[in-house]
Length: 400
Ligand code: GLY
Picture (spheres, rainbow, N blue to C red):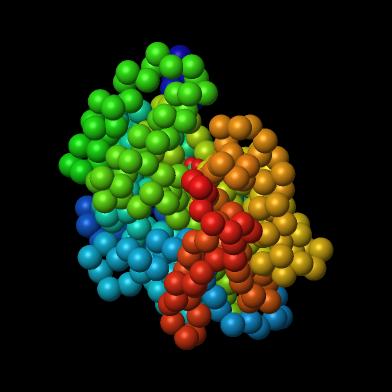
């Protein structure tokens, strides 16, 4: 009796769906993904390209008559980390877009730089682990013209979850694959799966965090949450990590001269989270949302606050009704503020005690970064890459 289909390797199942023998399917994928080259260069290997065009029928690329100035927006780490190379994420994405690359391939190639850079402790390799010391990553992406999206959550051992999310969009009928299933999916496609995505520093920081927080198990849950946050931020400062990366993430959105809009968000999530905790980053409408005719929005910061309000979706819908990206984003932040009523989430002034930012562009090429409090964001245009201040909703600091 033949083995049940779901016990068979993914290459066999996907191969069967598309009418290729498993070996031929694997060959097709692996010929595009040379594992060693993938890891060494961090190149944006387009896993999608590995899919025969006939898999689900090529989604049509919308031929828009418009011509706009190309643009890339991202969280501030998109114009900071280079992983030993010469370009930041927004520079890489912009260069690829203006060379005619697919916009999603371009923004993913940009964030791959940050995912692979161990110095960014909020994304990919070297991202801070969960409370058990295991790095679990979330990501999703959207392709405006193709109206396709894909994501992964809590994937372990793969340095570039953004590319696995893209493979979910390109090779399956699903949007989101999580945990062990996501890792198996990636392994079957030829992604390298490493035993541990910690660096020496992230492991040491986790051990210190664990040492200091263990006695807190005896406090009430509310007191414990407050104490854990205080200790977490203190450990981050002591280890030289950016405290803004407590919920750190990178979002990067691009607009091509033809008006094609794509975006990606990728993260290691909240530092030292409960294992399995998933934030806003892989969730469409929260960590990322876009409509090719309207614009794109993505987030960094406290994922739970975003999830309760689905702000990326709200921002895009605000822009659809004619709002400028800045006003659309500030409106979403006001929604978050008004829905933040629990004392543990408020500072001494009665205002939200967390940071959350949105990075926004519209189809006309206007852009904005907005934040609950002052912060920065990255932009790349024909004038080059810049780090600009976001428009804050509230004055002062989150913790005061
Ligand atoms: N925004 C990232 C997270 O909350 O996981």
